[in-house]
Length: 227
Image (cartoon, rainbow, N blue to C red; front, side, top):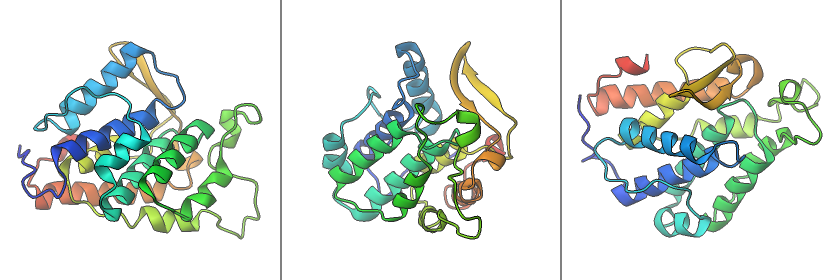
């Protein structure tokens, strides 16, 4: 399998910051203990960036992220797209995740108006039950309030195999049944049936297809393990 990143526009330092930012989103709700955090970090290192010296993967501050990714708007915005994907992985956009993403946006000097529509779906544990809220805000069914974020997510370019692998790992190849993901007996994340709970599921699947195509055609990687 080819693991070269020679044609990537991103440096190892940028990818390390990128993946640390994604882990910061994954841990935003505080549901992971230190051992589980270490397992996720190791999974990220071993499977997503095996040819990259990432160092110690741990949460990253908005300021540190901006110092590394803030020099190019396209890079920063593609990072935010993957951060939103991480937040949507379980079908719920939580207050904690939105807070971290907004802090990243501020530090990067970005304003993504499309995300305002997504914030209408915010899950507040004090007001909602997880199984009834998901990403379905009360609204006129004839109005697609999430149309802006759909278009924004579909604007992501695949330029780096490490990012493409992340997309392939985060979005399953078919709509999964409700289940818990575990590593070494530890619960990593609970995933509901996304095609029913997540109205942005089609956009995530579209990104996954583009990531697979990029890995297979441009990077000449064997993508069978993602299928």
